[in-house]
Image (tube, rainbow, N blue to C red; front, side, top):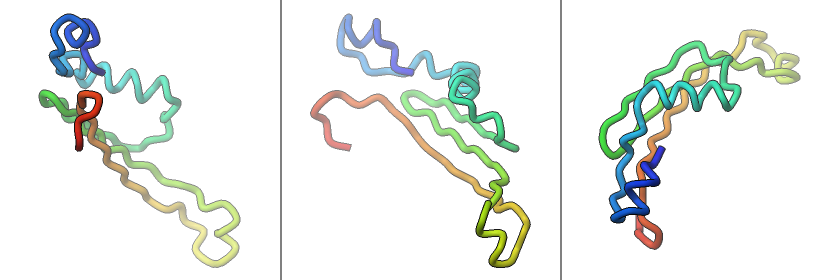
Length: 86
């Protein structure tokens, strides 16, 4: 959600478009509708997203437990200038 216009104008790498609403729209556009919980934190310049879901184990159910596995994933994104090291 990099503000491309600002970056092209003066090289400012900020994420002013990284509002929780934009992130929610991005999650929906990616088809991640099976999430049972989500948390979005948008602080300049980073955005952190945590999603939770119950995942069916498919054929692994034959080995024992038939309950879905509860999974939590977290990712943080921030703008980075080309050539910069993380």
